[in-house]
Length: 344
Image (cartoon, helix red, strand yellow):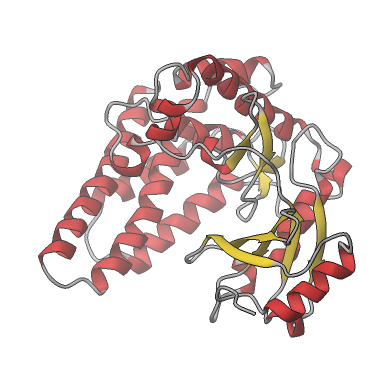
């Protein structure tokens, strides 16, 4: 029985059939996404019924960074809320089955709107519907009291931004191969002016259009990719979505090729105004958070660039490294501009 790397088809099939005896063997496993993040596989039975399986990357990984039980727990807690998540089939923590923990969920029909080309392909009448549903769903997530759904101990609730600032500065201090004076200057300015945290909510950690499955009517069918979810300052989530909106003319690289750049999705200011209408949070300090998210993405991107450069050889790699430097520096400069102006 053939299967992609990361799937032991015999034991995994048996485990799934115990929970879904209605399926018809054999089960086919196809990787949907792979890489350093968690691996996602489409599971299809002979009758065409589909499920989705998630597991950590193959090889040596930090369990804390790829915690299947944690992802499963978050989605289980949200099943009966206003936040749409895939129905769950089960969690396997017996490594004898597949060499690592994994969980299985129902396949949710819809589309992933990944880049600007995908955004242009969306029917114009559906684009504002997607924007509104995406925004309202985030507001619904942030309205949930973590204690009410059994997630009150998912993570530390207070000082979210201070902890994030320490974490990403440390990554640059320990991992960058160059001087980054503006990055460090921004860190000091951020630390000196952290907005008061307005309670603690569920922070998705990477909320944007291409991390949701969108239904045919333009509404959010399921919010996906919960691996960065924690508790803390929910305005960081809102700012992350604003950063990925892509209508900043200074945007470079991946952030400039997002689907919401297509006409009809509206501006990030429009999106933020709608969020404010559906949330009890004061969003007046949002420019600070949007600047912070650009700074944070710069730190993440710099880490990726350094790892790439460490093994780079030849002209092509040198050009790519130069492009990566430009993208990182652009993020830092945008963070500086937003923080200085206090506006988006």
